[in-house]
Image (cartoon, rainbow, N blue to C red; front, side, top):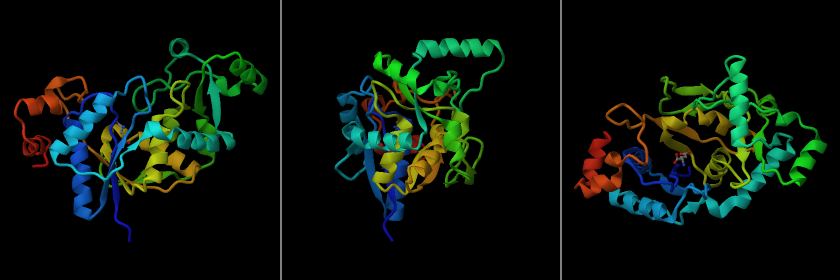
Length: 290
Ligand code: GLU
C-alpha cells in the first residue's frame, strides 16, 4: 500500500505562531509514526496579503523546529490555471454564477435583510450572501460583464447540494462540539460561497480541494477552525470527482485570555519565542507535544 501523505499548508501572510507550530509538528509526527510523507504547501493565492519574506520565514521557522518536508514545495500562485480548470468544470455543471455586488453593497443588503428579521450566518459568523445575482437573466449578466463591473464567481449552493446525497467525512480528530467518526457534511450552512474573485481567480475552498487531490493527501491534519469548512470541501470533492481524504482536526492553541492566536500577536510568535531563547524542544512542550 502507498504510504500515507500529509501536508502542512500555511499562508505566507504573517509570521508563524505557536498554533502553526502545533499543526506542523502534528503533521510531522503523524508522517513519522505512519512511515508517511510530509508535504509543505504555500497557500499564497491572495497576492494582496502574501509576501515573500513571510514565505522565507516559514521555511526557516519550520526547519528550526526540526521539521523536514519534501521538495519541491507547491506554491499555489504558480498553479492558477489548474484551479481555473476546476472552476470551469463546476461552471459546465451550471453551478457557478457571477455576482456583481461590491463588499459595501453586500454589507448594505445584509443590514436591510437584518432589519426585517434575523439573517443567517455561516459557521464562521459571517452573514450568508444576501444578493440575488443568481436570478439575473443571461442578457443582464452579459451586459454587466461587458460593462466591466467587477464580479465574484459564486457557487449555487442549493443546486450543488441537489446533486449530492448523504455527504459525510471521516473525522479522526475532534470537532468543536466533540464530533468524531463519520460526520455529516452541511455545506448549505455556508450559502453561495465565493469560488473566485476578480483579483484572485480562485479561492481557498477551491484551491485546497484541488491541491489535496493533486498531491495525493490521504489525511488532512489541521486546526478545528477549519472543521466546518470541511463540509464545503467534501461537496467540491464530490462535484469535481476528487478522492476523499480523511480529516484530523486538532484543538487550537489559545492565548491566556482563551482567544485564538493571531499572526499579529507578538507574544506567541515563533520569532519572538526564539529571540527570547526558546528551544525547539521547549516549543514542543509549550504546545503539549513534549
Ligand atoms: N492555508 C490555511 C491557513 O493557513 C490552511 C489550509 C488548510 O489546512 O486546509 O489557515
